[in-house]
Length: 431
Ligand SMILES: *Cc1c(COP(=O)(O)O)cnc(C)c1O
Image 1 (cartoon, rainbow, N blue to C red):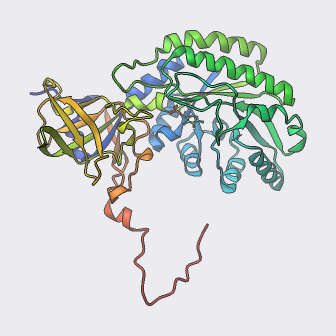
Image 2 (image 1 turned 60 degrees about the vertical axis):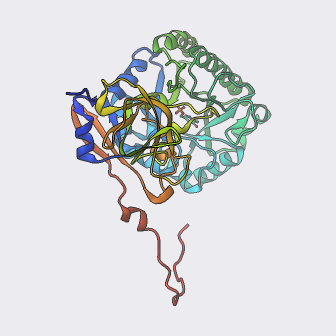
Image 3 (image 1 turned 30 degrees about the horizontal axis):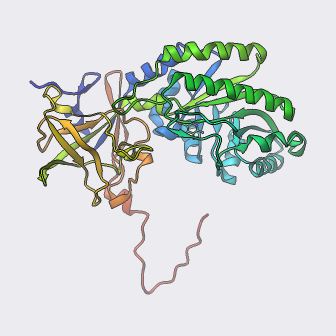
């Protein structure tokens, strides 16, 4: 028998048979180990919030919450997801540059811990909504800092950005607390960028953010009940990258946290993590439909592709690099050939792996893309060519759970309407 990829003893061929392909499989044990690998080493004063953007599946959120994660959300649906997953409102924060009135109202009505505001006009709107409701709105200010980090995959600070309020501008606004009487300015948030793979950079960011928060709280005379130091912890995908070492990272972070909490014992410290918590636990499984050659190169045409996994096409990189991939049903066969792994979309861009070293591929094989638990289907053009969403399965404690059904044709068609040439549209449009 050939060796097969398994998730907690469940063979990939069994998963494909039961749920079909393409399919995302999440390993609950991997999720738990990832969370605890950091949680158990990190200073207890630093709380870990899960950024639902990375993988908004409600079961993933619920499972991470069961391990101790709180939630950072950026849309009404993410907020609803976190609350339905059982995260208490006091463990939820909402951020994002373009929150609607409805979203801000929901933040106040559900009583979440903090609304992270990204502009002064947004603070003004929250102030107005709080006044209408007769409540005081807990608001943290997102700062666009003067400094930037080097060696971050996608830097957020030190540049003109739609995110946050420029550090310089904020220091000139020492009447904020007075200007917005129905807002409770209670904290500061900074997010320096994603995919950071150097422990020292994360420590350096944290030091600078805590320092900035202290200086701001002095300058604006705001109570510092919360500081959210962002995170941006990366995972390695490509050759030449290596994963963060949680021990090295926390050896660097913990004294910084200890020092800060000694000065500010009542301040809640938050780190918001997406990719770091979920990427490793997910595998994207595609079935090979056809194999062919073109001008001397081999192609495995699969049933899945970039419409579910745009991230695998390369992140912030012009040189195309491949995610770790394998023929999952024949793990022990040596990778003696190079294969282009492509999907069903009518665009050359639907190439999920270029010249991937694989064993000889046959129709019916299951090709897997590892480390695919973050920024998968929800960060991909899932509606392109109307294939819709794949199924998502969580394996936890040896049991399989279908946590998202595959889109069926009717799911994709039901919101379209065939116009009637003889009729006039009398629909009142909802906004
Ligand atoms: C995207 C985002 C996150 C999560 O980023 P990861 O790199 O997945 O951890 C956290 N905070 C903010 C503000 C973000 O925009």
